[in-house]
Image (cartoon, rainbow, N blue to C red; front, side, top):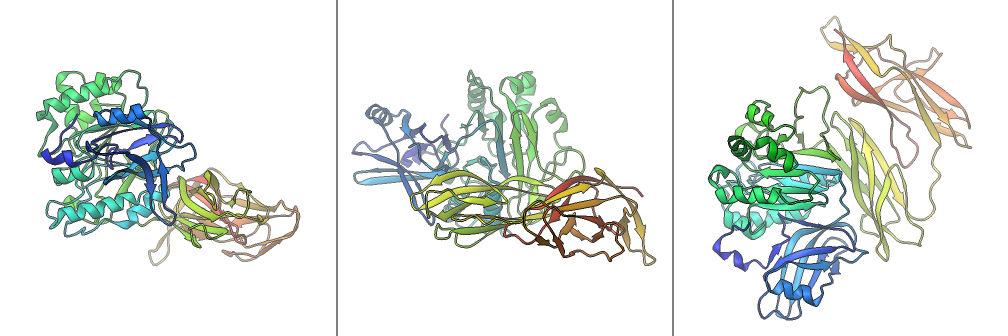
Length: 567
């Protein structure tokens, strides 16, 4: 389905585009649609990517495919088997001209598991949000999503120079590692959206075995008045053989398509036959669990999601802090990281500023060792984080990694290019080291936990009215054992809900300390007794964390707990 202003013919690449990306595995075929000029001779096609080490990868096209492209059809181009996974620009060059479609081809192996990040109403140009928040780029790249989805209102209607704002916004989107699917909002100039995002505001994007259905539905273009779009949706969802999940994007907070189906008496059937699993709506605030509740309940098991403003704009009760939402899909199950102590229902979206990772050293393939220091200050665990590293290649031996897992390792000639995967506990940190050449041995220390899975704490008050929690009667013991063949010196740190806990050696009368130096001979163990007499901890799922300083890499040993407060 194509809807675009009359001047959209000036767009060379029709598919894929920035807001309707294509996924292709290395060695597989990529389908493109383009309006080549009639006199374009000898066209060449490349995947390109900038950065410290720019890439330009030729795509193979056969004569029959080129002729199909010239006559308005979709041509299949082969992605070279050794192409590094990532998101690329698509470049077309011919004698006398060229065209580049930014950030539109994701070279990736996509299975049934997905990580999706949702961005809502950005409103760049609003007096409270003059520019895109760069923290979104850093944090979302660290989360390593398969796909980013955004539900409109990218440039505010009050922006004084919307064309310039769109150009800057495109550069921000190109800084994401993942591709992005973009719905159109009522603040978005339709001509500029068509120029920079996609020629049509509606579309169907394949993501491995899954798909994203992008709708045009907002106050200025309600879907209930769009019979053509409704017919197209019925046809698009009826494609035979599809067995993945369908993700829906729409700018309107009100899920108008669901009401249309309900009035036609086909809501449950369309949800089931269309495999609809997630509905991302635009808006400035998280869903309160009450608006449109009856309709959303009738659409079960479809999950309706809204995310607070993804910029510093303070429209309609937004906090002024950019937010985003993480949704993990595993098979047919959906999971959103959240604090178990929050109210039942859809978890709140996440504010920026609580997740970070810094690389010590120059991450440009000039170093032989790099260190990643990562911090998660959210009150819940975040798994599957990733940082892309580039190390100097000194020999054919692959790089080593302490504290993380190497994936997507690629030989880039004079460099190793790869991602380091790692997990972070709630209000926790980790330090990961990767390098080439001789691998440092590191200390061989094992941590054991002897405590119940539920920590029951009672609230107490000092004579001055200061409250605290105590679990002094709880038996807790942590054992640190030297499993190596050399003596080890370490000063363990124990943390719970972000606070250090004091401890002393079990069966001793020594003072409680937050960092006690220990020397352990091979095979020797030290038992630590925790001081739980005065705690500051929130109820819910938490992880008791033990850090063992001394090595270049440091990943805490964790023990999951449920904290219950009994007044």
